[in-house]
Amino acid sequence: MNHALPVCRAGWRDIGDIVDLVAGPFAESATGAWLVPDDRRRRKVLTAVVRVWTEHALLCGEAYLLRDRSAAAVWLHQYGPTPASHGYGERFAVACADHLDRFLQLDDALGAHRPAGPHNHLAFFAVTAQPHRIRRATALLAVSNARMGQARVPTYTEATTTADRDLYARHGYVTHQPFTLPDGTTTYPMWRSPGLREPGRRLARPAICPYAAMSA
Image (cartoon, rainbow, N blue to C red; front, side, top):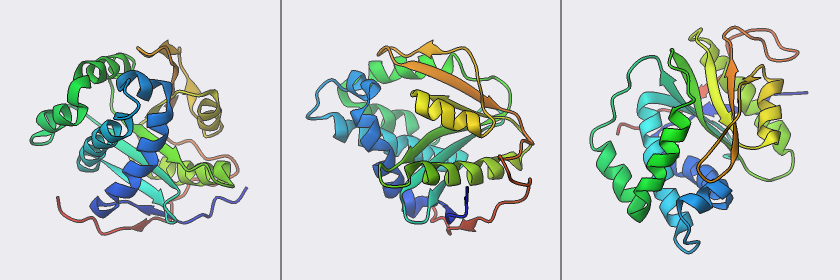
């Protein structure tokens, strides 16, 4: 399969595109409904929270987009203790509105299963539901995995659907013991060792077209 779809590194001016890609499916998920039961407010609250999370990720990691803005991958560098950015806690609480306790429960459930050692965490991976979705997902995952592999540390993510679990497995991720989120969603923690080649590809530095990140 051809993975040559153009992938670019995202910067601050791309946050809106990333948030739109992530917040839509999140609002339609069982976890999103549990976090914000009021369906009239759900999209607004989740959009605000995802924006806070994404801004934090760009300070403590990196993100990639297909150039046509149809897919996004947001990574956190977990190489040691990561201090929260200035005002993060207050902004996060404001974004959560009346649902802070549920967001904290979700964070505790996910955090309990994340690896303690240095790794890159694929925090968000979103692809629009349009033709060739699998091809787009595969292209973005291959390039961003290769970029993260340059650090020679493992990568980690959580899959909440069997389709995502199987996609990650095809890229060298190994499924660990599943666990259940507070809303009942079965979640598959997945681990990828450094130095793995993508199927059918040589290990090489990926061709990344970086965006000039705007200062915060």
